[in-house]
Image 1 (cartoon, rainbow, N blue to C red):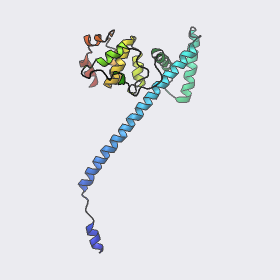
Image 2: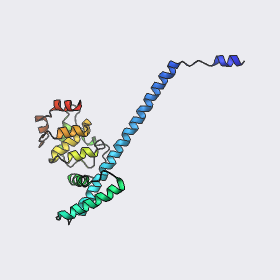
Image 3: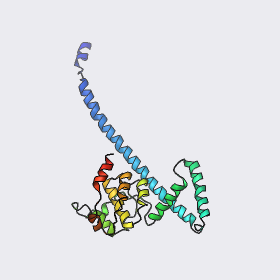
Length: 216
């Protein structure tokens, strides 16, 4: 009887186990990488909001005393030392000034992440790639929050673009195209002037140089 029980157990082929393991592992890795990407995006989004709020507090704290350069410098240096002691790197005086500039640049925004940033442009034809940006440039105040696709380094780069229509254009295209911060920096420093949506078509990017940059 014991021999019959042993012989009735099917023999599992090693190749079958290996194939099943590869398939299962691939799916598990996909789940883990997706979760990791979501965590990174969430952290980036929270830091964008935190830096905007810190910038707002700095601006408000300097009101009334900002005419005195020594007052502002002393205040930022003191806050920088305290934050560095509490949280470590990332709160130098230079970064605090970036936070202040970030708030000043986007003072009209709400401290929230726009999880559906493209719904307001959903009616635009898909075959017209510049319509989305063009619509936003015509309605520069339509955006209330910040993009979940863009990190703090993206927005820090955007703060260097002085023209509001141009800055908004780069923000939309960086979000829609999934540009990394180095790519955004490369495109934003090409000096394209965007006064009207049609200017984007009249003066296109040097995409060849961007492609070379991406392959470095």
